[in-house]
Length: 336
Image 1 (cartoon, helix red, strand yellow):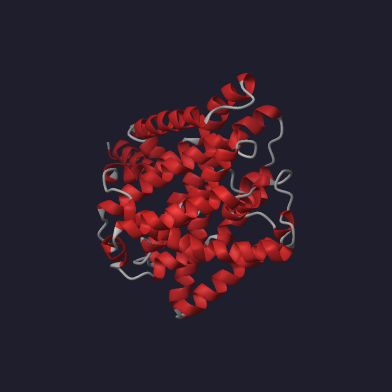
Image 2 (image 1 turned 60 degrees about the horizontal axis):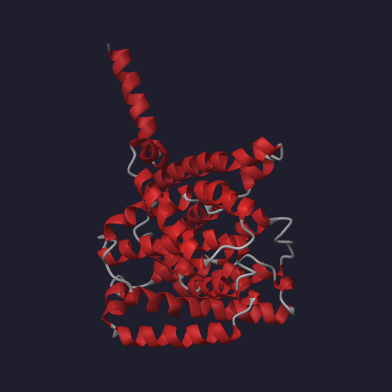
């Protein structure tokens, strides 16, 4: 499938918002402005990124999946190991959680493996689009009935996001080939008006419960009532699609050259945000301004972008290539 500049530019911009969300997390629930920005941006950040992932999975075959699976599993467990270093140092490492539960943004990698396997099953059993979307929506909404304490078990909540966002992946997968050109053809003033109205609503009525909804994996038990949580999740699933379309319509194609680095930035920024940025903030500040968070986000994104250009990082991100290099070298030695 031919890639386009708009999608690659969108991926980079969306990853920037992901990094910003993580830098703001330190005092997210004590800073009203950060909470409102988080609620506003979360309606399109992760949903659109996953919709694009689904769209790029249209031509998936069993042979392609097998190669993709091996490469992504290796990357997944390499970064699981990197992310586990602090817990190892503190003596809290749990091998079962390491194997079964994704740490931080690795839920996306685990999700992509599962979602693409679902596509293989859909093709094998000729499951119609309406049935796939219906089943995935039921699964997504059912997750909220699972009661898990997000403070005691954040890794479980993170893993559940894999199921919550299945419908968005299928929306991208079943979307027509020219969907992005259709969206771009809509007058941008409509998207601006959409976000203006939504922004005003968020400022007037946005609460921590809406943040829980957009995050994805939280149980309905954290809401005032189970019904309230379920209704908010349904609204979010639908609203996120329109919000994603509106956002895609207004973003520029300027950053398309950095789109290929989006996955690397997603995985690398965690190792800077939490131990370095948060480490400094938590030691010296009880609250930090949004401006500082934005400047930190720009800096961290640029650092990660630079790191993705390094050959060693590229090999870590593509371990199959590293394995091929090792085997080819050994083969040459044996032949000599």
